[in-house]
Amino acid sequence: MKEDIIFISAVRNLYKARAGFAELANLKIISGNDNHIGDVGEYYILWYLKSVGEDVIISGKRNSLYDLENNSTKEKISVKTITTWSKNGKGAQINTDSPDWNLLYCLYLGKDLIPDKVAKIDYFEFSEQKVIKENKERRILTNSKSFPQFQWWEWLENYRDQDAESKIKEHFRDLLNGKRSKISKKSNITH
Image 1 (cartoon, rainbow, N blue to C red):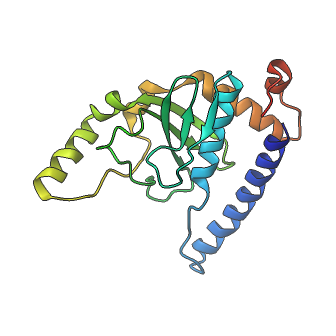
Image 2: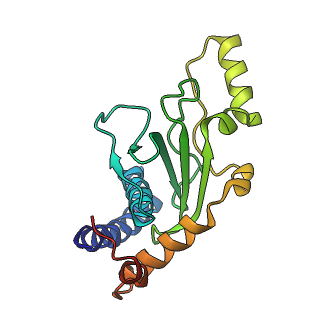
């Protein structure tokens, strides 16, 4: 619970800072940036999986293609996060050639940096999506190393994880509003 309080305080401060940076960018004083958003998404998924009893840890390798390791299921989990703050609607590239990760969580964060949407898709289903197949074909034909940038593709709607979405929203919105989370009370989550 202590980590959750520290985390939501950091999210609140990041929200305030991002609002200030967005205002500065609109005034053309800075170019604008998207730092730490990936960390926010990873924490949400780490928290959620732990809240449902999974034994999950942050990947020991900082430059690996996955972010979390689920010791309960042996899954290697990649987490991709984008916010409404993103002007072009795109995030970091997703390495689609390597099944080093076998599960992908996708988060779309609202302006308050609480998830509006959470999707979950396994590597094989992901690699069969049209945009991913077309990117692979283009890279083969052009010898390009450019992978697709993460965005909230329409087809991700079919993979929405309603349980993760609602639990994360409820828990962290309660904390953001200064309330004790009902989810923590119900499940006695410990970190």
